[in-house]
Image (tube, rainbow, N blue to C red; front, side):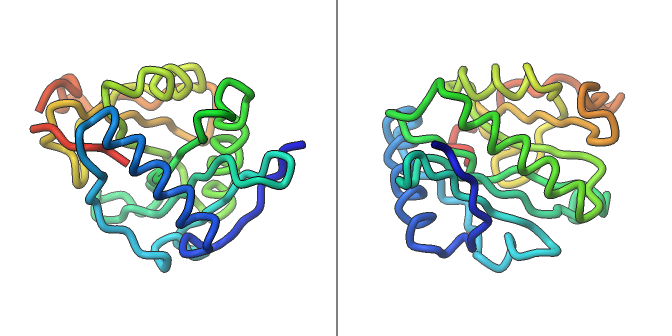
Length: 179
């Protein structure tokens, strides 16, 4: 059985899952994700964090937070989406994503954005399947060679977000491990 529990980002299970995610980033990027995040950033009403338990064991996590520095108060950013390797391909990421979108919408988000990396092919496919489209690079990893930035308008959860006219492709820019 899979259960989602809203918990703080500094919960022990979140710390353990984050460490597993960091190990994964080292494997695929050659280094840890060094983008600093604080538990308070994920606290309602400015954000949210959820841990997914598969048969009582922490197996997935994800969070969102508002990103007003991008110039739009209703823009929420997905952060720390991760599913442990042994639990992948079971729909857990889809369940976490749906929860994050609904939760952010409840607090007034109109747009959801995220940054990931080219090596995370399965994650990119998941986001695209759920209506996310390329947007201009943003945030901590905006200049990273492998960054892929995606976004979606939440008003119509089946319609991808339009790319800003002046943005151009979210192509290569210096490498790091997006989180």
